[in-house]
Length: 384
Image: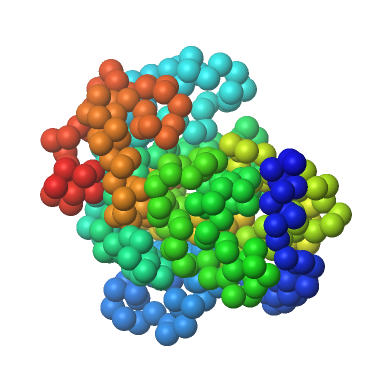
């Protein structure tokens, strides 16, 4: 029997369960679910609203403002631009990916080891932000919310008028594995048992365990995907859109199990790819997709690893939309296993293990190296 069909046959009747989660999601969208916003200083000084943690858990995303000083973020943006120009990164990027960017400049650079990226990742302030966000989870011993592992990621420098970097609504971190892989499936056990309203997106059970199949996009466990703004940007500027309902993943999982979906199908999910959320199967939830609010340089944006998100198809603004991708990847066995090969890539200027081997920075002048690591940076890199 086909593997998907066999899995479906093993489940209880789920139409009532789907109706329950469908009603909850519809009510959230009708109420106008929006992206929560808070200043980091308000959190740091204990002035944030008492209900903020529960609101963030419900929405699965948050903008935390003022994590870095605006001047610092703008200086980093300029320094990255100079680093790219000095090392002819546009030409090297085009050679690595012929035809990818049309006639315009690259919009996403396979750059991981610029000095600003390393400085931001090992920032004490960012460590405090990520620890606060990690404490919103029920870790249950799966990870240490107070300690972070480095996860090196790229930079986005999207220019006005660009239409090459759009990305449709999707969920990272696995596709068919969410249904079929025993390791990933443990996370969603309440959903598949017919109790989607009892599913807690912030229960870490099963998420931090090593192994598992089909964990596309990121080998590490990200409690929060995220980026740091280097320029001002907002709706229409070719930036992020989110579906701010954390439990929408339960709707997506159950939708694929309804009788109108072929026995061998999971509503378009394909192994090894992002989990695409499409009008064919998921139209009722797609109406909730909203752009992030305007952000300033130094603000940070965070979203749950199960959250539906997208990138606007075109940059219709007047200024560049630049970010450094920096996620929250707490200390746990799964994440520690990634650190040694990542450090070797850092030392040599190669692309990290999760990413295509473009290795653009091996000969770049001005690249950061191990000597730049602070004590916190060394700890986060697994060096003690």
